[in-house]
Amino acid sequence: MNKSKSIVKQASISHLAGIPVHYRIIGVLYKSINRFRLGDEGNGVLLYKHNNYAMALHLFLHYGIPTAISKLISEKLALRQYNNARKIF
Image (cartoon, rainbow, N blue to C red; front, side, top):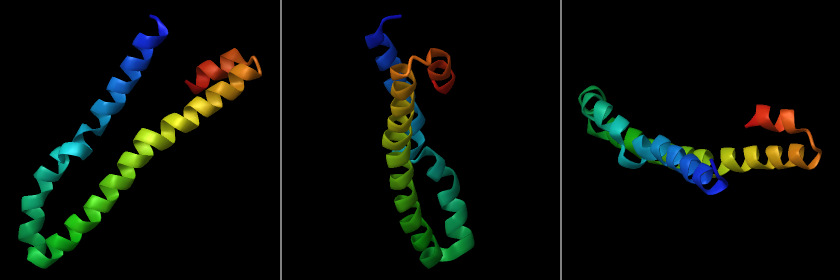
């Protein structure tokens, strides 16, 4: 597999992992239950916090982890430690 196909595959996997956050598929399952249990005010606070959590999770998953992994792999490749680079990947 050439490099461009590998990058496309990795980007696709990253995007698919973020779909539940983007479209709030998971949130649909518990919004109605929490509205019943917590009332309107409690549900409002929960949704406010959930939006902050979803944004932080999205930033971490899409920018933090891939950047850290690529930095570690680049370091190992520069040191010609190919087995360690493969383990990190």
